[in-house]
Amino acid sequence: MTIYSKVYIILSENTNSITEKNGKRVKKKGILLLATGFGLGLSPVAPGTVGTLLGVAIAVAVSPLDWVWQAVLAVSMALVAIPICGEAEKHFGKKDDRRIVADEFSTFPLCVLWLPIVEHPWLLAVAFLTHRVLDIIKPPPARKMQETEGGVGIVLDDVISSLYALVLNHAIWWLLR
Image 1 (cartoon, helix red, strand yellow):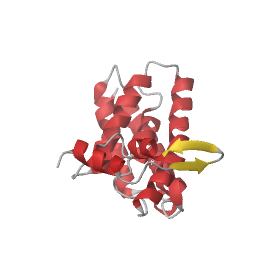
Image 2 (cartoon, helix red, strand yellow; image 1 turned 60 degrees about the vertical axis):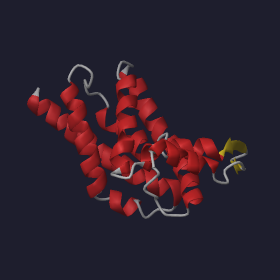
Image 3 (cartoon, rainbow, N blue to C red; image 1 turned 120 degrees about the horizontal axis):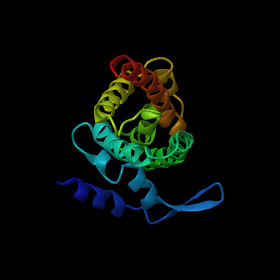
Image 4 (tube, helix red, strand yellow; image 1 turned 180 degrees about the vertical axis):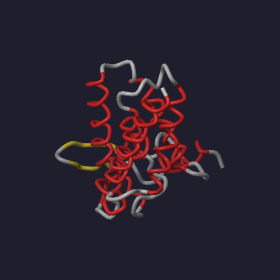
């Protein structure tokens, strides 16, 4: 079964209802589409790693922006991922379901802030590796944050791991440039 077939199945489940969140109406299909990284999270192998690829594309797209705007967008993406991941978790009925990858792709831009990733693509590859390894290892206090309920727990551990990756990526850049 292809990823696109899996996306169709998830979106054709009982998702026609509209969810009420902070007085705003949001269609559940859109939330699930975002939460699964437009289907990347439905990969049968390493969905978090596959989902991170969307974050790589986003980071490259925003890299020409001023460093302040890069930071604003990176933080905003992580904040927006919280309710998206929380709603998807409720839908799937499982704590931090592996199909939810909005936390991975939305926090990847944090780990490349202020790095010349377009001029030096090797930095992008290094950042991808550090982001994934630190997300899997979850150095303190990231693992503890994962225990937090809902979308906050899903995203916060990735934010912390991405900040560790940011420091490591800058150290690598300064040592090897």
